[in-house]
Amino acid sequence: MHDHFYSELEFPVPAVRPLIACNMVSSLDGKVTADGNQPASLGSSFDRRTMGVIRSHFDAVLAGGNTVRLHPYYLGVPRGLEEFRKGKGLAHQPLTVLLTKSGNLDPLTPLFEQAPRPPVIITSASGAGSLPPEIKRQARVEILAEASPEAILSLLQEKYQVQRLLLEGGPSVNYQFMQAKCLDELFLTLHPGLIGKRTDLGLAAGDEVLDKAARISLVSVHQQVDELYLRYRIAW
Ligand SMILES: NC(=O)c1ccc[n+]([C@@H]2O[C@H](COP(=O)([O-])OP(=O)(O)OC[C@H]3O[C@@H](n4cnc5c(N)ncnc54)[C@H](OP(=O)(O)O)[C@@H]3O)[C@@H](O)[C@H]2O)c1
Image (cartoon, rainbow, N blue to C red; front, side):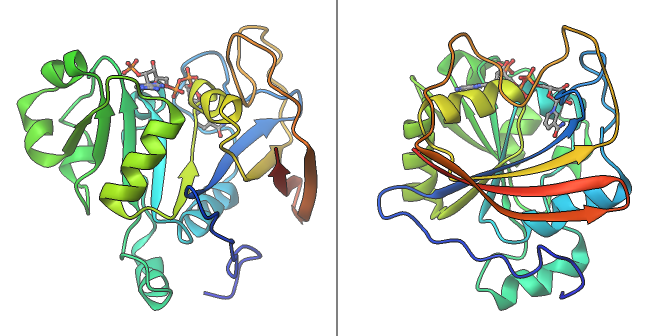
């Protein structure tokens, strides 16, 4: 797997918690959603391929309830990257981790019906009570009374041996990890589109202005036709 500029990524693992990266695609006007909750991806087919390449370096990939209701697919890699992962000492597929307070997830979707590994669902006690029985059979359900990023990371590290975690949104999940200063790298695809609608969301969506990071440094830039692929490192 040497045909992509992200094929050979290496990440140092922090001593106290997993390394955390986030991968998102944004329009030129800074939006990561287009007309609210539309399922269509903003990026190109090369961007979707790049998502798989980035995932191939991580133990687990995490997304929030709104994102998985719109894109109900396992957050895995294409079959062709499974051997590459095994060669790096990783499981053949990353672990999919879903966050939901409500437990409002549909079992009749590829996410559950075609999952190569049982997804981990982190939820509240009432969310667990609302999960359909088919999902409870197919997934690993974890109840956290206070699902802060720190609590989520301890659970994933201690119980699932996650050392490198990739966040794939949406903006409200990204915000929580940024607010907790639990984000080490950002992969951002800048797609040449304009959305314009004021209610569409940017990379992070929360109630307060985030603390300023000590340093956000640009690690690499790649151009693919009219898209830019940016990699940033964040120090808090
Ligand atoms: N452009 C991109 O790269 C990209 C990537 C990903 C997503 N998106 C877009 O982002 C939009 C969705 O973003 P969003 O901010 O509205 O939602 P989101 O972050 O995907 O999901 C929010 C939901 O996640 C669950 N959740 C969040 N934090 C939690 C916690 N600490 N504990 C338990 N559950 C938690 C809750 O689910 P419940 O409601 O089930 O309780 C919450 O309502 C979609 O339009 C999607 O297409 C874009």
